[in-house]
Image 1 (cartoon, helix red, strand yellow):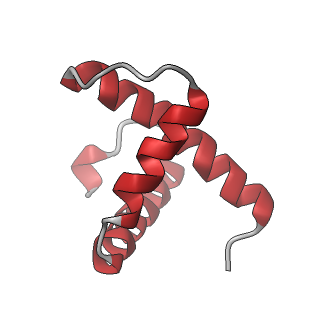
Image 2 (cartoon, one colour; image 1 turned 135 degrees about the vertical axis):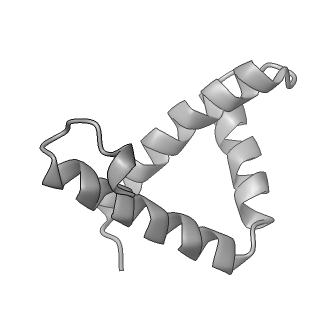
Length: 78
């Protein structure tokens, strides 16, 4: 189970990522952070759990590779 502190950190990352995605894809701009959170919740609720699980597993793999090389380039290790 993810702690509430880590859940907040993940949410902050997702919100920042969401802002970038909405900006780059030309979607209707969001008015504020609350609207962005609402849009992200709507999209998130439509995802199959297997998609979420696969994404988490992929990030774990990528983070471990990043740590192994102390933050240097690691794409070649994946």
